[in-house]
Length: 82
Image (tube, rainbow, N blue to C red; front, side, top):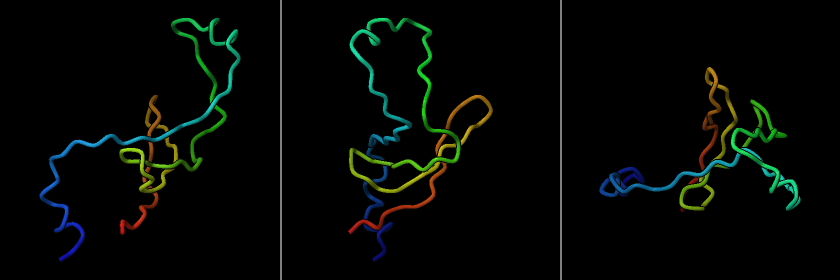
């Protein structure tokens, strides 16, 4: 039986997918100065590699892409689940 056949009965269960575009360290003063509409610049850009997690577990990797005016993630690799 293949892995897909094994998990097929679980196909309708919703799971959270996480991709983290960047980290930023700010002081409390800087955070308090934030307002609606404020833009926090990212140090990462299109083409950079990022982790893809499902329910907090690393399952693969992707790269940041720009789709029109929206950031997205192109999946580049998956971990084999054990």
